[in-house]
Image 1 (cartoon, helix red, strand yellow):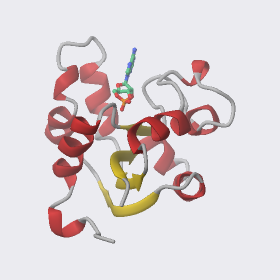
Image 2: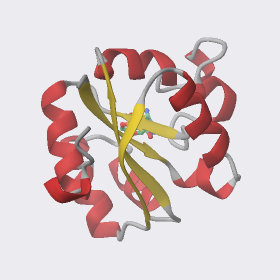
Image 3: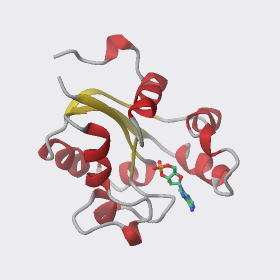
Length: 140
Ligand code: CMP
């Protein structure tokens, strides 16, 4: 089994009907989906998920946006998962994202940027545990 990362398809991409296209890109890039659920975060849950950004000027807006509609939470498995997934999604700001990346194709703005990917193995574990129990992560 490879390493794991955590991802979320964000409200803008779900609302735009891009979930299927994004999941297809993720699978075609060699990631295996080991857990997946669609849910809508409350404002408080979005605040807790993004607590590391609490002091940032964009925090309140980010929490409002992340609780504005359903998201799809994912645990993904692949060798070198965290780094390879960040390459697949591209830069936070879609204006700076490389051609062919998920954010270049689907993000609307630096905030409504279509998808999240963990920035470290440690955060992948923390973020996966926020959404999924051990029982919900497939072992194969
Ligand atoms: P994500 O990778 O999920 O991590 C933090 C999120 O905050 C980021 O994607 C964006 O959705 C948002 N974000 C980061 N920087 C900014 C910014 N400068 N202005 C607004 N939102 C931002």
